[in-house]
Structures are given as C-alpha cells and as structure tokens.
Image 1: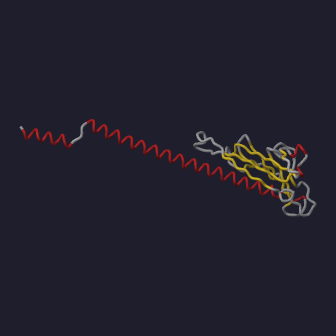
Image 2: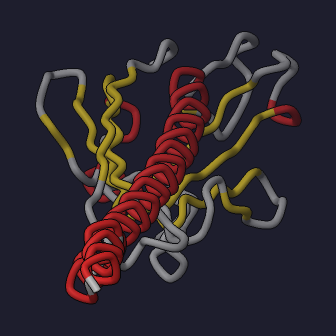
Image 3: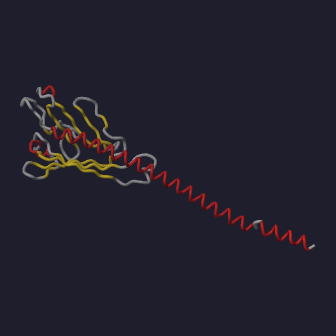
Length: 208
C-alpha cells in the first residue's frame, strides 16, 4: 500500500497540472503574438521607408530637370532667336506665374528653328508634375499621387519678389526662380502615413 502511494506521489511530482499547462500556453501565445506584431511593424516600416525614398528620388530628379532648363532660359548665342527667356504662351499651364513656368532657349545656337520651348506645371487632378516640350504631347515627370503642391516664385532685377511675372509684364526682369515642391508616399500605407515632404531649390538663370 505504501509503495502504491509513493508511486502516485512521484508521478504527481514529475507531471504538470492543468493550471500549469494553461499558464504555459498563455505565455507561449503572448510571445508568438509579440513576435508576429514585431514582424508586421518591421515590414510596415521598411515598406514606408522604401516608398518615401522613391518619392524623394522622384522629386529630386524632377527638380534637377526643371533647374537645368531654368538655368538655360534666355540663351541666344546668335542673337537672332525668337521665343527665348521666360514665356507666356497664352494658357494657364503654359505661362510663367506661381503655378507654372515656361522657358525658351537656343541650345544649338542656330536661330529660332532650334529654340527649346518647355513648360512645367502641377497637374492637380492626378497630383503629379507635368511637362510640355514644344509641340509634343504633355507628359508626366512624376508618378500619380506623389506631388501634393508645386509653387514657383520669382525675384526681379531690382530685388523685389513677383508671383506673377506674366501678369505684371516682368518676364524679362526675372533674375532668380525658387521652386517649392511637396510630395507624399503612395501605395499600401498612403492612407496611414499622410505626411508631406517638401523640397526647395533656388536657381539663377545664367542668361537673363
């Protein structure tokens, strides 16, 4: 009889009670949930960082393209080219004001036939930066949804600012152009991460 009781005691001592098993399962579940949440959070952060890097790269590339043309505005080596400098081509998205900029220059130095005529403006419907190159169809410089605002501002030869050189007749007096662009991420987490990221560049046209 004593031997039987001793065996039962040994079995109870070496086993687990139901409460102990429940506690172990609960602790394990907590660790699994924490690990899963950490994986989800890490994946989200990495994705957002990639989206942000893509947005910043698009904006910087677009900024550099615009800056290159603005620096060339007014180039006329032969002195015979027409349609150079900062322009007003008669449309809201094809003149020089706070919402758009139009530029002409003679890159090939062979007169009016070679004048490069470009305009940049903000396409608010698709939230992107647009370019018109001569008579070519308008195209986009950035992906849809990446640009939240685009503003051009101008400083004249006398040092005064002018937000609408076309309207004020100061197209020939522009000496400094400042571009301000704000962008945002697009993709999986764009509804959660709605912050904007802004860039500014000040350019001095070399030929004005």
